[in-house]
Length: 429
Image 1 (tube, helix red, strand yellow):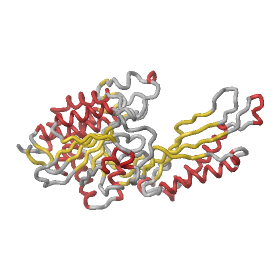
Image 2 (cartoon, helix red, strand yellow):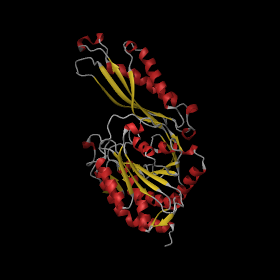
Image 3 (spheres, rainbow, N blue to C red):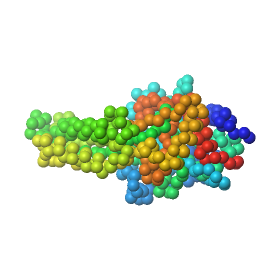
């Protein structure tokens, strides 16, 4: 058979209804953090049916806690197995590839604020809605059906291909780290995150931390004699925003973010405190997230945060004698810039994907520096493997009524199939 780009794209089209059905079924599994098992059972079964050699295991913190890139966790991995499907080439004449996606999704928020059940996907026009449809189960679908389209043509990659469905991308990335610890390596990695068919040139890192304050309780009738722990948090938040502004200064920016005035974002994501409306609160804690540029040291950021909190507390009449405590959990993620990798392998992988994208989209592949983080750092920073982040268009990810553009999913699946065919080469089944 003459395998032209048109032949491969047509094979994707023939399978696309099945791909949408697969995506809808995957969205029906509410794979929130710590509850990924049912979705991973589904993934393992689908990979087995398609001839992959399936490796399914429970992530163990003791296996990865000493590795660079590990982030501390609060939730066990009992119901959160990793799944990797391997297609091992007979000829190994091409270049090996990891296609990676995460199965975990973020919380939905109040269900009544969704137009419909977030785990009952609906298709309207070219959009499929549901939690995780865009971020990033559509990417898992495009990765799988790109390989499936080649299989329908009687072909398979002429180099080892590893299909990864990993857990806990949304808060640590430890699922991807566990794949490295287990020995999965390749010449390049493709991560199909939903960035509107752009290639991610750089991404920030992320650090999560908690600040704990203790006040002095008293009846509100005598509030002046107490120390309100909730109100004491306000000047600390103000000081952290001042640090945020300093770290976004033009002279500190990574070149890929030179034109972005506010690439590093502080987010106060959660605050709790107090016990009773008529008592001055004796305690308060808030959770925060701070970004970091590629190449910056997380230890230096921790030191800056701690110094900022200490300085602000010293100026507070009560906190000066009751210093806040800072703890770390979740993301301790370094930034990553594919644009900084000028190795022949990275340049070749980028060129191959650009050619595939242009064939499908009829336009050059755009590059974008993003102010979020992905699992790309595990490959690019820790495994010296160029990581290409390229996936479909989605809207309201992490928000209400998340949805993904199915025509964009079709194009990404076609481009991924063309990329695999060029990067890995093909051999007969």
